[in-house]
Length: 212
Image (cartoon, rainbow, N blue to C red; front, top):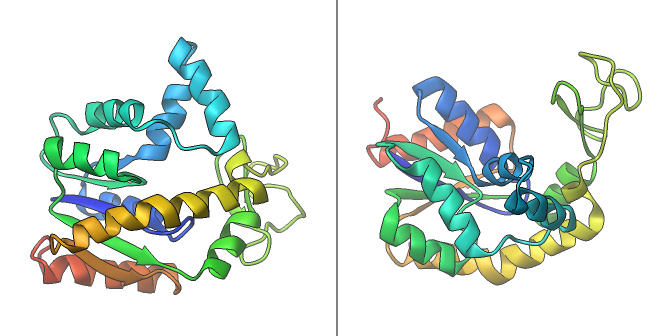
């Protein structure tokens, strides 16, 4: 199984990938996590990545390609979200790690904005919240460890606008590229997590990638 998850910002790609990975023991690769992990290293590349990620700019394709390819190497099965985001990455992936299926998770822009702009994260334990739809019990305090919640740099309004612009101007071309190859199935991301996951699995079963 080699699956790519694409969709607008905050459509639930990572959540669906994580749930499928946990239930079926499929390696899950998050391009964003790959970049963030590399950015924490005290290397020239790591320091440069830290600054780029703060701005919300997309990292050049050749760097992302190399880092992601390292993660996918020697894996017979995988599910990846957040990659490929542009045609350079898509062409590289087609040559080195062509997917069997591309799952497009769609949500309206307004839903995306609510999920991102109101999202908060615990810097200590990693728990996530949404001040509008899933608030902590105490204002801006983590329910689990009591730490003060933060808003990630890439969840701020100016970065959200850049992410949507990149999605419309670049990632939609990737989606159309895979649609022309008959590799795309769509899932409604504007529903509960469990309903979204149920639909996600049904689409994979229909393609013969999961057993009934």
